[in-house]
Each structure stands twice: as structure tokens, then as C-alpha cells.
Image (cartoon, rainbow, N blue to C red):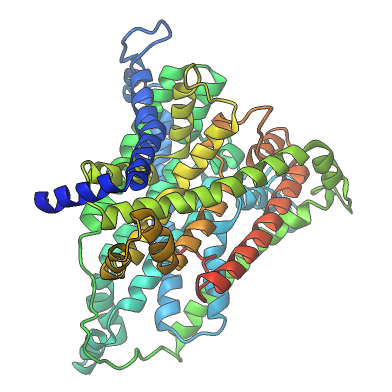
Length: 559
């Protein structure tokens, strides 16, 4: 660190009390809603019901007893889902970058769709398709005792839900590979298969590992799908909830949460510091011809068939939920009805109103906070900057259930009795959303010459005025992409907020889960359909704002 530059920056900060106050408030917010809850959950994992120090919960988990099963199940599920998702994503990404097939835009949209959808859509569709009264299992295959619940159902649902994450990583990577290396291999007599195995595939190995680890973390942290379709196959994220809420064993729930947090941190560290440092960039700046796309032969038709079939499957899963919301009793009485919507609107207007209001409040707060933190990290020197950066980004590796139980432990008593209030839900929304906004903001700010801001400062503008009048307009695309992501995460939040809802503030995702648990699949489908409509309208409006104020890019892909 350049101490003279840091001292100079600190003097500038001292002359701008508003910016100094901003740093203090951001630090307090992050310590209060990230550091403090993590310390509380660590403490709770070592305290028994009599508030005495005990490692009993960890012994129960690691000794192979009942609590060890969820850990083993989660790791097995995550490995299978990560492997399948990465393979499917690679086929999609390779087809997108190398093969001249029709419907590429459709394939790209289909691959992105699960990211912006409610967490229950694919799980509900799986029940409607392959459950005991499922359209495929009972009516097409004639199976009378089909069971979609358990490991097989979770693998299907999580793979379709999470393969887009791997696709986003691999699609950009494959497009960035210089065609010159592959052309050199072909010119030296190697066939297309040998070129792929010896040139293309090795260049993408770090990206494959990156995609695998990202999906692994998502699968481990998933709560909604195991609760909906897991059956007797328990996972850590689900067991944390069951121990804390069902059995009132906060020590066991906290210990499981700490183990889950430890695993996700290790995997995230591997993805960030090991895989992330491996270079696979082949763009040298030298002019090269465009890639020669594969536009004939069996390979073209094979990849097209795979992408087309998978796209049809994904479309079928999404269409079934709105259809199911208009069916009286799926598989038994398939007559058209509006009863589910009448039931939902008579019962559930409050969750609908609460979810939309809280998401609309959290979205600009998370977007602005992400840009402020990015600005402080890239442009300012002050004591504790590295710690602030680490704390602000760490929440990306905290599973939702861990954050939820940590908030219950931290904000359940005076003077921080926030449980049951809107503040704690808003805090959870913001903490879960800001890492993406921060990363987008940092990437944008690193491309802007600091002399532009220095000119404003030399003309007498304060640091605060410079940020809002110069910096923020220059990083509008990153700001709006952060807004879109924040809104999507807030509307579809489940694992963290399931611990935080109350009679005063309920959410749509919790209402959907409640309907699934009592077997009202039609009502759950109606809730999901309403949520999809709200999300679609809001995203269209946000994209319209992006086109007007933030440039021409659309950010529904969250890429």
C-alpha cells in the first residue's frame, strides 16, 4: 500500500464529511448485517439448550449419526448436478459459439430463463409431469405409483435450474478463444475431433472447473427444491430449517449451517483464487479471421437436436405451471377452473402486496449501495478498504438458510429486535443482491479514466457531487444491471427469508411453499403464475429504462 497516497486520500476525505459519513454508514451496515450474524451463528453452534459450551452438535453430525446423512446427501447431489449441468452447458455453449444452427437466439433465451424464474416452477412442473397423477407418468406411460420425490427428482429439477449458470461462464469463454490456434491445428493435418481434444478442450478446462464449482455451490445452498420435491432425501439446507424451526434445536441447526458455510467458502475460494487465476485468454490483439462455423455434417444436426430437445423440455416445464393453475384437480379432474385464482386472491393478496413493495424498496437501495461500495473500492484509499471489500463480497458465498438462521439469532432480542419487521427482510434482500452490483460497478469503473473525476474535483465539486454527477452517469449500464438482478433476487428470495417472515410481512415464495406442503398444487401453480407475470412486467419496464437511460443493452440475462 502507498501510505503517502493513503494519507493524502484520508485528508481529502476529512475535507468531505459527507463522503466520510458514507464510508462509516456502509461499514456499519456490513458489520451489522454480515459480520455480526456470522459470529452469532458460530457462537450458537457451540451452545447447548442450557447455554453451556458444547461440541455435541458437531459430534452428532460428523460421527456418522442421523445428522451426517444430510451432509452426505448434499455432497452427492451437488456432485451429480454439477457434472450433468456442466456437460449440458458445454454442449449449449459450444453450439452457440462454433456451430451454425438455426434458433440460436431461442437456445440462448431458454438457457437464461431458469435464472430469472421463481424457485418452484420447475419443481412444480416435475410433479405435474411425473408425479402419481403426472401427465407423462400416469397418462402416457400408465404408471400408477410413480414417485418423482427424492434424489432422482432433485437431480432433474436442479440440473434444469442451474445449468444456465454454467452456460453463462462457458459461452463467454468459448466465444473468446482465438480461432488462430484451431486453424493452425487444422492446417497441420489434425482433424476436427483431434483439434477439439488437443486445443479447444484444454483451453476451456479452467472455465469448466469454474462452471462446475459455481453450480456445486448453488446446489449445496438450494432450499426451495429440496423442500418441494426432496421427499425423504434430506439435504443440509433443508435440515438446517427443520432443526431450527421444526425441532427447535438451534445448536444442531447452527452447527449444520456452519458446516454448510465452511464447504461453500472452500468451494468459492477454489473458484475465486485457484481456478480464477488460471489463464485461458487467447486473444492477442493481432488480427485474425473470424471462426469458421460448422455448417454441415452429422455433428451440426446432432448438436442442434440436443439443444432443441432440451429447449422443448424446458419450455414444457414452464408452460405446465400456468396450465396447471387452471386445472381443477390435476390428473383426476382436468376441467377448466378459476377456483385456484379465486382462492389465491381471497387468501393471498397480502403476500403479493408485501413481496412487490419490499422488492421495489430493496432494488434501488441495493443498486445504489453496490455502486457506492464499488466506487470506494476502486477510487478511494482509506484504512480498512480491503476488509470492506472482502465483507461486501463474502455474502455471495453465504447460503440463504445460513443467513436466515443467523439473522434470527442476531436480531431476536433488544436492542436489535428486528425479527418480524420489514427492515430485516430488506436487509436480507440487499445483502444477497449487492455482490453482483459491486462486481459490475468495479468492472465499469476500471475502464474509466480517473482524470474525469479529478477534473470535477479541481473545479470545486465535492466527492459526493462528483459521484452522483459524474461517476454514476458513466456507469449507468452496470447500475441498471444491478437493479435488475436485485429485483429478481428479491422477488424470488426463499431460503433466507423463510426464517424472517411473519404475520405482518409475508412473501409470495413462502406462500407457494405453504401451498405445496398441504398438497394444493393448483394454488401453488397460481401463485407461481402471478409471480412470473409480475416479474415479466417489471423486467420489461426495467429494460425499457435501461434503453432510455443506460444505453441499448438489455440485462435480463444477468450476464
